[in-house]
Image 1 (tube, helix red, strand yellow):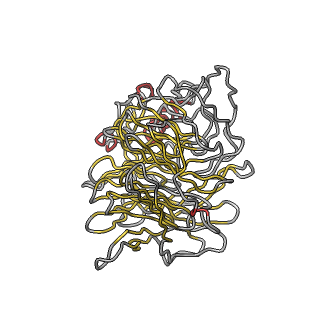
Image 2 (tube, helix red, strand yellow; image 1 turned 90 degrees about the horizontal axis):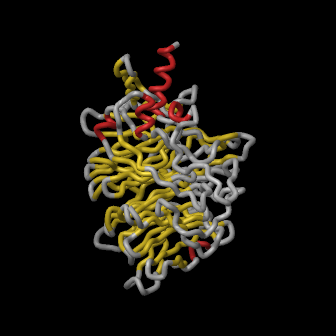
Image 3 (tube, one colour; image 1 turned 180 degrees about the horizontal axis):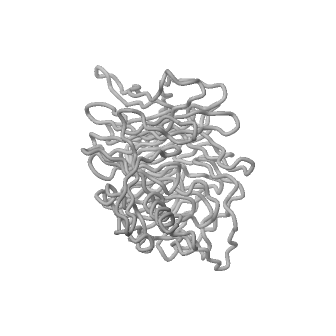
Length: 481
C-alpha cells in the first residue's frame, strides 16, 4: 500500500503536480479566498468558454491597483469579452467580442490612460463578426485581427495620431464544410447537464515581421505572400487532415507562436464530433522552418478515450522520480486538444493541453522528447473550473500563464523539463520529495480583497514592467516588476 501511495503522489506531482499538493488543502492558491467587503461567489460561472462570455459572471469593479501591481482599466462598454491583446511600450491593441456590439478592436494609450475603439465596424457586416480570433501587430501603425467566418482585417495608419484605414480579406478556405458544425470553432460539453461548454476558435493571425505573416482558419494555415511582384495575397500552405477518417472527424488549428524568423509553431487537435457532446479531440503540434512543415505530435483517438501516437511523431512520456525507488519512465497517452504554445528554446516549445494544468515540453533536437508534466501548487480561485488555463507566452526570460482568475509566471528550465521535473512551488516539490524544477512566480489578480471569478483568455507583455491580462469584461495592466 505504501508503494501505491508513493507512486500516485509522485505521478501527480510530476505529471499533474496538483493533486498531491492540493488534496489536503495545503496547495498554494495564487488568488486566495478573501473577503474584504466584496461579495465572494462560491462557484464558477455556468459557462467556461474559450472566447465566449460567461453567464452569472462577477461584476467588474473599477478599483485601484492591488498589492501585486495589477490594475483594472475601464473598458468603453461593460459587456466586452477581450479575446486577445497585443502590447507595445506606450500603447496596446485588443480584440473583443460582444453579444450586443459584435467584434470590436480597441487601443489603449498610456498618454490618455484610456481605451478607445479604432475599427470602422465593417467587421460586423451581415454574416460576419460572430466571434473573434487571435490578432497580431507588427508595429504601432499596422494591425491584423480576425473574425468569423475566416476573415482577416489589416489596418494601417501613417502615424499613431492618424486613424486606421482598414481592408479585409476572406481566407481562401477550401476545406470541409459541415452542416452541423463550424470549421472555425470547436466546442464541447464538459459536464453534461451543468451548462458548462468550452469553445476554442480555430481562427487567428500571427507573424514574425511585417513581411512574414500567417493566418489560420479551420484546418488550414495561410501565408501572406506576394507572387511575381504583385500585391500580397493569402496562400494556403499547410493542411491538417486525413482523407481516410470518417466524416465525423474534425481537424483544427487553435493557436500559433513564432520562435523567430525561421521557426513558427502551430497547435490544434482532431477527433470526432457529435451533436450532443461536441468535439472530442487529440492534440496536434506542427513546426514550420525554412525546410517546410513537420508534424511533431499527432495521435489517433482510442476506444478508451486516450490518444495513441501516430508513427513518425514523438511519443509523449512521463518521467517519474519515486523517492526511495528511483526514476521510472513510461509512455503517456494524453487526452484533449492542444490549446496554447510558446517556444522555450531552439527547436523546443511548451504546449498546453485541454486548457488544463497539464502540459508537454516538446524538444525536436536529438534525442527528441515530449515530456508530459504539470504545474504544482497552482489552482483557480474557485472550485469546479473546467478550463483553468487559457494562455502561455514568453516575455524575456520568463513564461507567463493566464487562466480562470489567475495569472502567474515561471522560470524557463528546459533541462529540468527534459528530466520531467515540471513547474511548481517550493512547497509542491518538497511535498513530493524531488528536486526543484522551474519555480512558479506567484502573483494575484484579486481586487479589493475578492478573487476574480472570470476567465483571462490571454496574457502578453513587452517586459515584466508592461504585462497585460485580458478576458471576460476585464483588461488588467501591470507596470511593476
